[in-house]
Image (cartoon, rainbow, N blue to C red):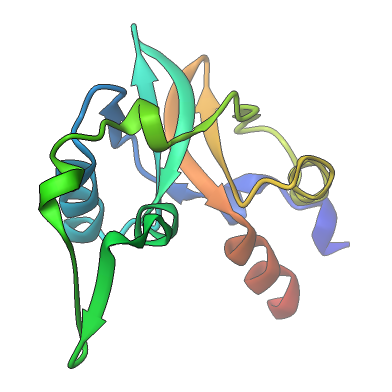
Length: 137
């Protein structure tokens, strides 16, 4: 059954992270340049949360005009990732199954979770990735 597939079939593999003290404007620019909807936030070499482009835009300072979107940088230069991130998100082992991750997301109302291998970030999986995978199988 497709839900028993390993999460490796779904995860967006990227070891890219941002430090907890990075300015939101810089985190947003970096995420956009790498086409990442979510990114893990690190502090002292440990993942302490996740941040998404959507959460940044929902702060009310993102806008879209004429097909282009950007972030108002004034206030975002004052805010740091640790002030906006979702804290204490569970870490997903690279050996987890799609079903285990989907259950974890549903029970905790998480939209994205960091994926780790031997404690090191190797990617991130979001709810859209899970749904698209299940629709294909």
